[in-house]
Length: 276
Image (cartoon, rainbow, N blue to C red; front, side, top):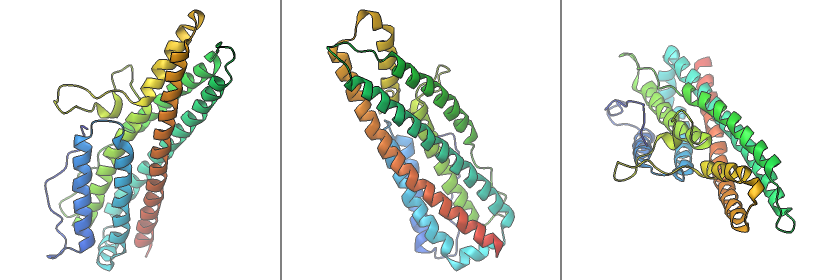
């Protein structure tokens, strides 16, 4: 997927023989960037989030190295920038999880109505309208989150490579979360597209919409044709879409919860380091 963050070509200029954890971090960053640039569907969201969780596991190890702790304790101004950025990332994770939870609960209401249908007659207007209204609110909140995911500011020349590496991690995290919020928000009237306007293999076609968009479109269609009746095939199609979307939401939410815990842990470690 397209990324707005510009990465500077460099190698980690840690001591002459970098610690294995630093090398592992650099390799993980490279893999994640490659994944972000070549992903072609929303199904890669959970994979990217899981990759970030693995990345932050290495960050935790990296921050425990005595040399890095000493370096960071003498670069408190730079660390303040990293801490500010970490707070924004945590806010995005929280907002995303809230949006997923809201969507999941309302989808369950729609499913409950589908199960209560009687003699082929079905009225889902109330639940569908409630869901779509909530989706509009979610889109507004998610779009705000998207705007708050800004690229990291450029490092000053004197900044140590340890701080630079942490900012690289945050930049990659930001790009991954941009994809996440685009996936949750779905298509926008303004043209803000799903999953950052993913480009297909031939570089000429935009990737298909997410399941959020599919469910939105189906509910809108069913509401508009209420008077003409809803066929059993349409009901089956909607039920299938909802079940698939619920599975996606569950996978993404679990990955997001794990990432959130690691973000909290790394932030706490940084706060402890600068408080010494």
